[in-house]
Length: 179
Image 1 (cartoon, rainbow, N blue to C red):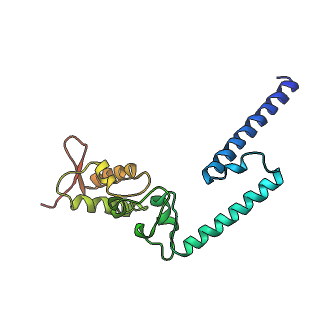
Image 2 (image 1 turned 120 degrees about the vertical axis):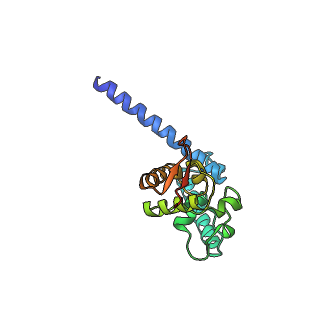
Image 3 (image 1 turned 90 degrees about the horizontal axis):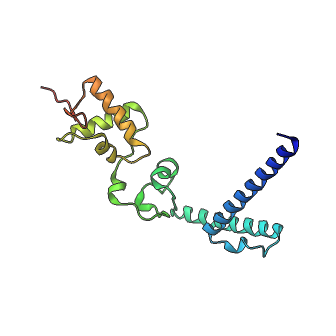
């Protein structure tokens, strides 16, 4: 490539990047309902000042709502266990942006993070259910991200240790009972 070709390529990349940033800005402002800031009715400095004013006001509004115990979670299953503090302790106290959580979803326990807890949780579920359970059935009993692969690993470990027994087809497991 010649120096001129490199310079042209870099200028083109900057233009593409600028276009992507403008699209992100447009989508963000639309999401907040601030489409009036998209149009060039403000100067760049006035637009920035107005955007900051609105963000500060929104932040104050959300802080006041949180102080009253009203939290607007975007991803309740992920955020509540990690970030809920004080009076906001469960789904009955949460108003989220994606709708109410179902009772079945709220009743599911979180899948433990440590391996010992995972093995114990899976084994407990196997012992309390008379019929064999598939890894998917067990994973559906817990809330959390990427539970199914961790349940599958726990089941295989429990089978190797003699605590769980796979069905003849290998698709489900049951707790091994003492004779």
